[in-house]
Image 1 (tube, one colour):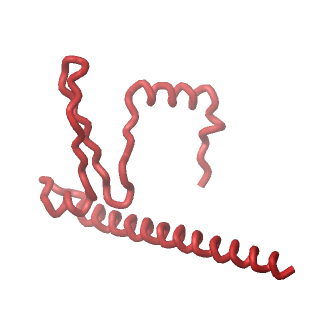
Image 2 (cartoon, helix red, strand yellow; image 1 turned 90 degrees about the vertical axis):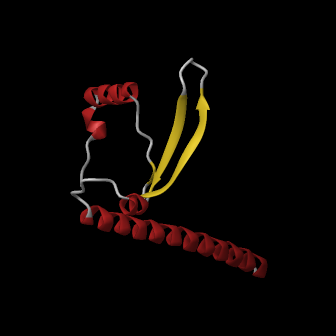
Length: 113
């Protein structure tokens, strides 16, 4: 009986620790989103991109090695934005296939708020 109790207690302690980590991560994301919204609201009409604005919107920029395999020089650049991280912008073919899926089955992609 006490063995089951101890096992359950260990399991619950581990679960609480995991949930606390998840909560801390969610709270940080919420704080980052609030900061991002504050910056975006304060700078809705800007004429030039200043270092202050870039530092408040972008967390880091990664420039990868160049690729000359096709005869052209391509360099991959990853921009990690504050609060939202890396955005994967789809290519034209991906957008077209998604639009075709939506047209064939619009009920599946309907949003309700």
